[in-house]
Length: 243
Image 1: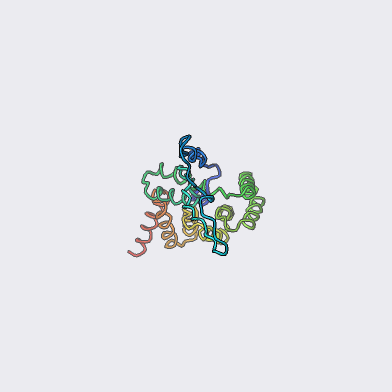
Image 2: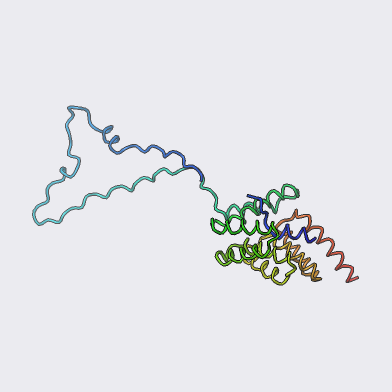
């Protein structure tokens, strides 16, 4: 259970423009005028400011007729790249529909990759160094780097989630739970944080809270086998208490 929770609580460390189409040709106004020109020798008619009769002295000036509204410029038919929020919404919808655990795992990994991408080179560097420190079992350095990450990017959910993982590994459940709650405040659909929180509740003997939290994770990620098994086990244990 401890190893499983660490995997679920942390996003994967290894997971990870649309080119504009050529502009459509717009006929040049000069070409249009040349095509409309009368043949040589044809009488010409006044067709411009010189055609207007000169205004009599003292008469109000007559404004030229308004130009017709400009035609819209042809736009690139290619659909713009979806925003990060749109991509996540699409992935979560797919995750909720997918019943096959292996296929759902692929979708979950794509979601984790989106979570891990902070959009900041500085934050990505700090997160990478924290992961390297954790892999060397240098937890003090890893925590220090994650502290810096959270100070610089307090709205970045994955910084909180990664620190929660390290706190859990050090058996600091109170600090880990606080960081998980901060993670869920920023990303309520974080199934890894929910599963980790449920595991901590279970280890603390808070089985009803653990069951409810596993069910929250399954509402987002129905094919999460570990959560399914835990729900069955906890439901049986609680039913036995009532019998």
